Amino acid sequence: MFKKVLIAEDHEIANISVQKTLQDLGIRDAKYVYYCDHAVTWIKNAQRDGDPYDLLITDLIFEDDHTPQQISNGVQLVQAVKQIQPDIKTIVLSAESRSGVVDDLFKTHAIDGYVRKARRDAQYLSEAVKSVYANKTYKSPDSADSSRVKNSHEFTTFDMHIISLLAQGVQQKNIPYYLQQKNIKPSGLSSVEKRLNLMREVLDFSKNEQLVAYCKDIGLL
Amino acid sequence: MFKKVLIAEDHEIANISVQKTLQDLGIRDAKYVYYCDHAVTWIKNAQRDGDPYDLLITDLIFEDDHTPQQISNGVQLVQAVKQIQPDIKTIVLSAESRSGVVDDLFKTHAIDGYVRKARRDAQYLSEAVKSVYANKTYKSPDSADSSRVKNSHEFTTFDMHIISLLAQGVQQKNIPYYLQQKNIKPSGLSSVEKRLNLMREVLDFSKNEQLVAYCKDIGLL
DNA sequence: TCAACCCTTACGGGAAACCGTAAGATGCTA
DNA sequence: TAGCATCTTACGGTTTCCCGTAAGGGTTGA
Image (tube, rainbow over all chains, first blue to last red; front, side, top):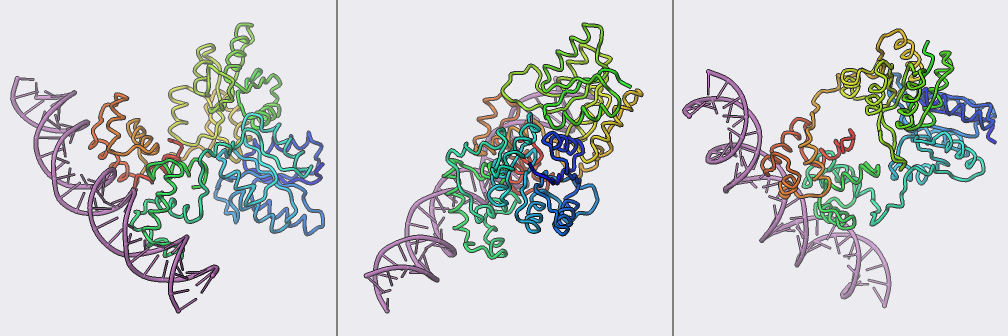
């Protein structure tokens, strides 16, 4: 089993339980911190001292309490930690249920496990730690049934820029201007219109409001 | 200190920590349940056996896991329990941060304490239990900010119907038809337009896409 | 080099949404 | 009941959006 584990979780109540779960798994050396910056410091120091951590368990959202922090959320923390110690295992523990966000964690940030804070989260966390220790990835069963991909659409960054601008209240006819500002390749109004039309058609939508709602739901916005 | 305490909290991780917090306060007889209906049963039986509970600690939101329940959230639970045993003390433990909701809990449902799930929630919970035992109400300090109401907008059910229909892809000009179907009072197209215009103005938005995004963000959709 | 192709952009007609104005309906008060 | 206020609806002109067509611009391959 893992020897050294670092827990980054701002909620005291959650933090306590994670500690207890790890104890029940026979993990003695568990350090728990309430801020992302502290987590980075401990990872750094352990690495420097030749006694690195085996596993990082982190939340996604850390609440701002007016203590200025360099790193303010779990995604940034995972990135920073992997830069310091690329071989560290990571499990994310969060209430996030949107499949887009969770899938992105595995795909883009190469996390090893995801446990959604829900009914049997302690049990699933225990299973996650065991799975990850066996070099397997783990996703708690109640999280993210991304199977509902019916007639899904692979959103490009171009798509996301457009939808993001719409959600910010930019008028369609002004979108080309904003795209040029960011040096995004197709910037013509017709291209924007064509792309929106395609997205709506694939997803069987009729209005842009649906696109915005859909992207919010799956966590792309 | 309280003798008998009942904890209703579906998240295992949170439940474990609440138990531990109570133990640290010297409370031995703490029963913990994961469903509202179970809570009601235990309150009833204890009352019947002449050994009632002194305190109920409950979450607000209980996730549906396909186990059919009579009572599905903390507000309903508090109401039901007070009907069985009016003198029981109640502390709500929840992530809810909207001051309106919290204030309503104290005013309408006469709860004795509120602890927001946040950084020092375990510590605040401990303080809450002690305060409530001393017949004082308690509200955790971080749940206070009712100041962020800047240019907020109180959404009516009418507003929500309109935005919901938009998010479902209904064309604006067809919304009157849907409103009539549901016997919603103003159903004219002009009324819909006026209302949308007002909402956009109050929130300083220019497009309906922003309204949809906003409602998704604050959990109204 | 030319030609075929794909991607991007420009244009124009028609539909929908936006917005101001005013007429009608409802409700309250004197 | 008359008068006033408020809410609802109807109607138009303007803007924006939608969508099909076609022209420009770059790449590839014979």
